[in-house]
Image 1 (tube, rainbow, N blue to C red):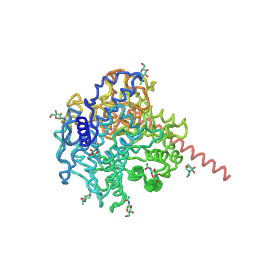
Image 2 (image 1 turned 180 degrees about the vertical axis):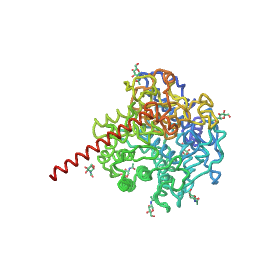
Image 3 (image 1 turned 90 degrees about the horizontal axis):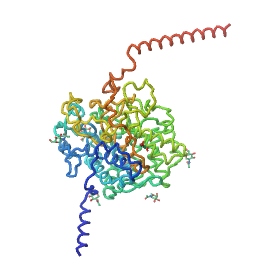
Image 4 (image 1 turned 60 degrees about the vertical axis):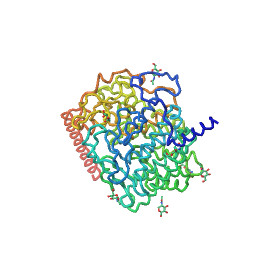
Length: 597
Ligand SMILES: *[C@@H]1O[C@H](CO)[C@@H](O)[C@H](O)[C@H]1NC(C)=O
Ligand SMILES: *[C@@H]1O[C@H](CO)[C@@H](O)[C@H](O)[C@H]1NC(C)=O
Ligand SMILES: *[C@@H]1O[C@H](CO)[C@@H](O)[C@H](O)[C@H]1NC(C)=O
Ligand SMILES: *[C@@H]1O[C@H](CO)[C@@H](O)[C@H](O)[C@H]1NC(C)=O
Ligand SMILES: *[C@@H]1O[C@H](CO)[C@@H](O)[C@H](O)[C@H]1NC(C)=O
Ligand SMILES: *[C@@H]1O[C@H](CO)[C@@H](O)[C@H](O)[C@H]1NC(C)=O
Ligand SMILES: *[C@@H]1O[C@H](CO)[C@@H](O)[C@H](O)[C@H]1NC(C)=O
């Protein structure tokens, strides 16, 4: 009798829960010193990779906006910006602050959620075995519940809350955030195909996760957070947003055309990739051959084949061939052609691993895209590693498979410390690399050598926009689990707080590393690279000079070529060039003469 009652109470309690119960005691990131402990592959799952996965998720908790729940683990965070949306009579509180500042930006948020849900669908067991699934659920709902609020009617989507200029002028904690936080929307007459399709893709990808619609084959099962009613709600938003993207009466256009305020921080380069991705993910969510056909048609119509560019929050095209291949190997009824998607994916990946450009390897071995890598060098490399590792088991030959895995590993190792971060003389000394100390693992709080000055207004504890670097001298809080922007193209990392291209944190920076950590939890017992690094070595020899990036344009003149040397080289090149032209003209004239003679 009593047990029946208890059982009934238990079920009543579970029904009341909106989401998975969080672990008690909670997971709290261990001190960075823990990152220097080898585990020698003795434990499964590997404790270092488990912590990394947990820390990467924890970072998102530190980025929360709105009223924080009692389960908040980040002791130095407070509730904030609870009036978001009041200007448009909506509740747009909640969600995530985008990066080191306080705007809430829908387009990159959607990209991050898509990436995380896709990864948790393919490598879900990693979240389960590390006991992080409840945190994953919590993290996703904090973003998805907000995204639903930002989509209050079929053809309205809020794409930005906060003002970039106001935000740039403020540097301080979460209690003094400027209250001027306008809400910007796209709608039927002023649409944004990319933002609507990008949000649709996030809802579809996460609906697939919550509904347990995995890809099978070489992939793991989705993380165990299934909830069919939540999955259905997400799917409804995905469908509405896809229709909005396709059929808005204002036509198809990039969202910054309709909302110029978004252009400064997150202008989109095209909407064709998001539209294709939205159709593709929705086809999987609804098992629809006609949507799948739409996705293939878009791919052709928009000429997405042959793309060699970066994969990131803006440019999703390289991920499409991978997803097409995954879906095609998994479903016979959708009608895709696996070998043609393999060719397309492998054409792209082979150029990367064979260094055929446009991306190149820095001297220290980081995959680098001119332009895209300049303001955050690690993100393109991790995104490539994430796609390569996921695609590898679908490769047409084992040689390709191995080369993809190896290349991906080299990028992950670089980010986790196998990099030549050892001073300004780097590019010209050509000393053998990599096993030189000091080395930096580019994830905050994961090792004693991790960056200690991430560009995060909240974590810094400072409150003066004109004195970001030295006030306070030491960053007030450790922003555990944050992947930072990354070193410059000469592999140099300066750890300067105001140097946002190198030190800023962002929702989309963490996303590929989260999936890579999940892959590693499942695929190996080896520790992450940083466990063997010599502690404290970075501190003793920071690079000299200034970074070469858009926060420090002067740094690009750099210590390695003086202006005089450049002018001298310019003169030599010009003289040699003129000489060649002169000789050529003389030769051609002689040739002409001899012919006419
Ligand atoms: C599923 O999610 C919905 C929406 O958040 C929630 O109301 C419901 O309680 C959840 N169901 C379970 C079994 O957790
Ligand atoms: C949260 O509030 C406390 C107490 O006012 C403050 O010390 C702390 O810096 C705040 N956190 C942030 C991120 O501003
Ligand atoms: C539609 O969006 C545009 C751009 O944000 C905005 O100027 C306009 O007021 C919106 N229309 C309505 C009816 O809210
Ligand atoms: C777009 O509108 C057309 C014409 O009304 C309709 O047939 C089609 O289903 C719509 N597409 C989407 C994705 O809603
Ligand atoms: C998808 O639809 C096909 C028929 O078009 C059916 O054979 C298949 O079982 C469906 N798959 C799922 C997962 O429902
Ligand atoms: C699939 O694609 C391959 C290579 O692109 C092509 O040779 C083959 O004919 C295609 N198969 C079908 C059934 O269309
Ligand atoms: C760390 O060094 C040990 C030997 O001391 C080696 O067995 C292990 O593979 C190394 N770990 C990594 C991740 O390099």
